[in-house]
Image 1 (cartoon, rainbow, N blue to C red):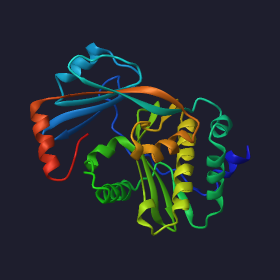
Image 2: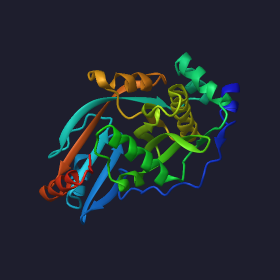
Image 3: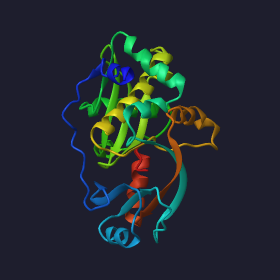
Length: 271
């Protein structure tokens, strides 16, 4: 298919994989620590309460994202919606499901001089710096850099300058978007090019996952109720994915809550 072949034209060769924390159990629980307190995140299709209960004995904070509507005793449950792309489909079918204008904008990236894409980008520091810069400009406390050690970075560069960065949690089965950040609001780059680059990166992520046997690309949540989220929600819906239920489950200890409040005072945040 022409679209698949052309998609390779300006993509940088995949760099050696950035080490991603492997699960400390069968549920792909990513482990971190802060002030000596262990905490973990998991992205799973479902979860067994008994298994999760065992993790509570080892951690001070747990964040579990599921697609099944499970009830985990002691956890605060928050139902949401997300958009997921089935990358078990043939690449041609995945691309065909993208909205027509989205496909056209992806094709436009083939003709923009100096535009390149890094798949599984090893420049984690550069990606985090852009994320931190954008969040501070938005008045949002950035997450700790260590939170991104469980992610893969997908980047778009214009003449060597980082333009767009998408970070994804990697479970080995699911690539779930964590953040999309760009220079779109800075005015130093044509916002249309930023938009084309963002859409092309989503396509590159689908291709990356497909080539490695992943089943799902999760675009990281859609919000139909908040007018301020309308733009990003429309963006995520433009890739023809299915809108499905997802559930976040949070549990924390008092020492962890105290530590997180200290981080907030320092301008940081653990969500």
